[in-house]
Length: 175
Image (cartoon, rainbow, N blue to C red; front, side):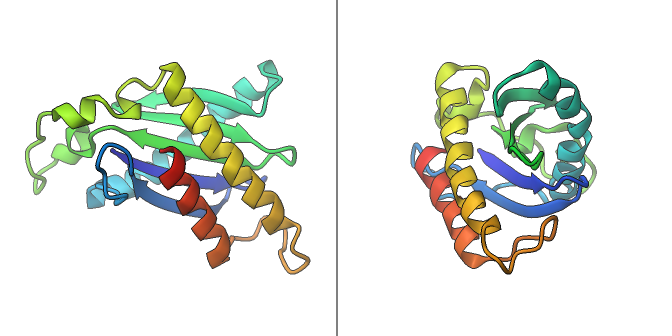
């Protein structure tokens, strides 16, 4: 299972991006996205911003849950008080996407028994939603500490290695 996490600023520009794989069920934490999927992930997340803007006014909470689905990708969103969006794209099997089967790609592999027990195999399950919510809250805690830095300028990319490490630790702990 592979994940793509992105923080989108108030001007709809990416402030932070991080790809990782699952660390649960014997995973090594490495993302398994194909090269063409890496570019599609950015497009999919940014196309979900329209849905976020619609959903945010009908929801009182910061965590908007699973807001969009594209092929076998599920997109989850968390809003901060300053309208910065944390977007998480979950892909249970990067080899089974349609855009991964273009010429030059290997044929999709059937899902293994291990993949069927992972969180993203059922993106609407309570345990999946809770794990993603906990991940987002942990990242939000690090985000607040990052933007409180007097040297950070609002809506500029986050380059802090400490923040990247906190996101990696949260991903390993919850996903």
